[in-house]
Image 1 (cartoon, rainbow, N blue to C red):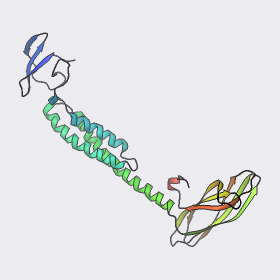
Image 2 (image 1 turned 45 degrees about the horizontal axis):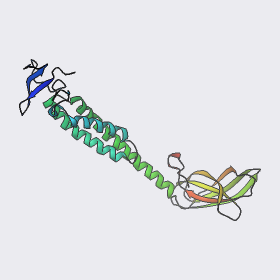
Image 3 (image 1 turned 120 degrees about the vertical axis):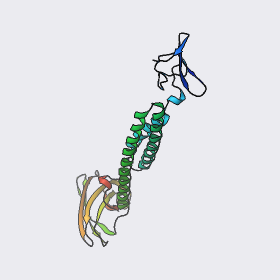
Image 4 (image 1 turned 90 degrees about the vertical axis):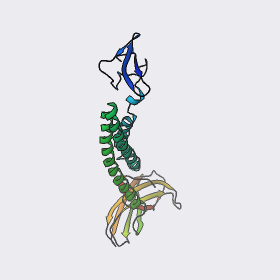
Length: 235
């Protein structure tokens, strides 16, 4: 609620002259740049009594904290955090003149700083994810083969071995396809985590999959590096 219906403007600034119920008099509290100093009977604050920079700083700071730690979009969080700090500084300066928006500007500065810290975490997380995906997509040199493919009712067990041909230790996963004889069209597929293999070492692997009564062969579908964060990105 406002204390007066009208407050008079002298063309340069708001004055202490006010009016209510058709009576004009001087506001004993002087000029107060708040909701008590409306520009008209609608109760809206005058333009010089608002602080949009402070509000924008607080909003952008909250957004920065919310998305800064997320992979890939961390850069957007960093931009929002920097803008929050810049607008927070502007909002603080304006609040000294108008008395409005000091808390929002301070919130923008605090959350902007936190958003930058979160964005650093997000960038590190993004780099780590891309590195893990790259290791999965581009495995070390290897020689992988299926040694046997045996059936027990509807279950088929594929046994094979993998040799690390690289000069460094590396992790591997093998995707085994269970295909119709004479084709490479998989009826079923299974992923085997072979684990870390030393240079020149050969390790066995085994996987069993229910494939139904139809005859199948077992073949190596693909060899990849270690699963990124234990998640299978697919074929």
